[in-house]
Image 1 (cartoon, rainbow, N blue to C red):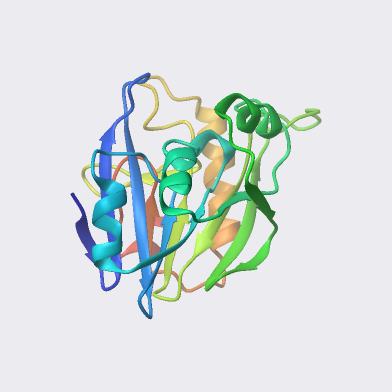
Image 2 (tube, helix red, strand yellow):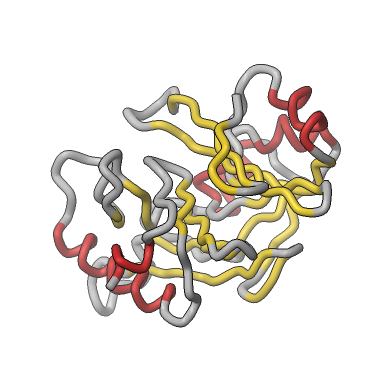
Length: 212
């Protein structure tokens, strides 16, 4: 079920039932405690997690990634932390949580959460737009990893893809360029080695080379 990614970091994946891509969840562990990031539900997950450590929280990078959060939170009696984010082209957070029946979430802001650092990333399709194309959080772990929602992912061959590459066969060149610039700016000064993505594939050990 869980694939080891780094020390104290695991991933699991499952097909999105509505779209032609996979959903990836990450398990972060520290001192016997566990954080689940953007967790899709797979059968038996709630029984397997306590064998690894004590589940403490679910952290979402975006309201688009509620996935199995409501059920997992209920079964394990752990809180859901949802990012402060604006309505965007891709999601209306408040409506999404209402539609999914998620009422027990806590909003987190840019700064820190548990043992993670949090940073807000916003992509605009055009200058002067009233709402962003994408607005979400990236999470920075202590092992020099950044966890992303939709803004970036690794390809099967290890290349860095930015929105909306990886989601379509005909990516928007303007969006790709703008989101890549946001990623480069957001990652600057963080000394990151790894990218853990909620879609696609992780990039382990050579992230700096991909964004230079």
